[in-house]
Length: 169
Image 1 (cartoon, rainbow, N blue to C red):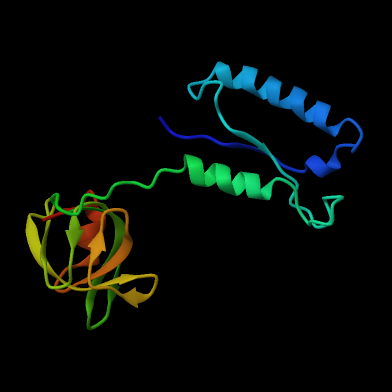
Image 2: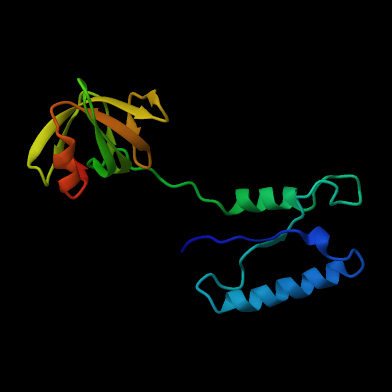
């Protein structure tokens, strides 16, 4: 089940007198609402004020440390499967004159390296990857979860556009 953290921002806008009581009531109300959802009533609710000068104790925020620790405690890093078969979803492609075709997308499963052959199942063809870029820098490998562009020789971009946008190897 997806994790959810509720952040109540701008608590500094509440009058200082009675702020704690108002926050307590609002959090109880939100918990009752959350009980009716798939997230349940144990969703962390973190009140914060990020505005400069929001804290009367000379700090320039309220609750940010609590928010950071709540995020650290509740965020799960995904497990990457690098050994499975390569599966790549293409979301865009374009030709680069004299180089080949660049396909951009997300590695859904497995990993891939430059020089490796990949299959375009809808085109019934296998092509070699010339290079891989991530954030405008060449990389030696793309793994599950990476958004990359791959330069592929002897591939027409109009063929890729007309296919379903899937690549495997």
